[in-house]
Length: 112
Image 1 (cartoon, rainbow, N blue to C red):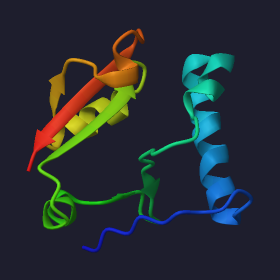
Image 2 (image 1 turned 30 degrees about the vertical axis):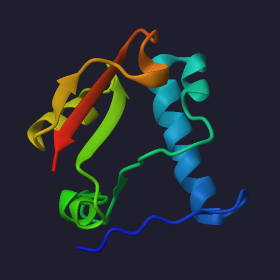
Image 3 (image 1 turned 60 degrees about the vertical axis):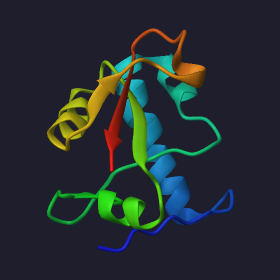
């Protein structure tokens, strides 16, 4: 599986569609403040294919690129994400950086 990370310009149709779906999901779970959870910067969004399977980057691609650890975060009101990460071998860790003082954030890591 190839891991593709693409930078998209503001206004890109596929990016706009993905962000619209992300905002709707977060607002549905967290209320109006959910929209503020998606901000500029690196984010990992999982897109579903036509059969409903998650599409994303795999650990092999990250390891091949020289990354020793994968770290990610999610919110406590996102049980699907929590289940996906834990079933994939991610271990809950203490919050880091900007997540230290944010209630409801769950941070995970996986050694490669």
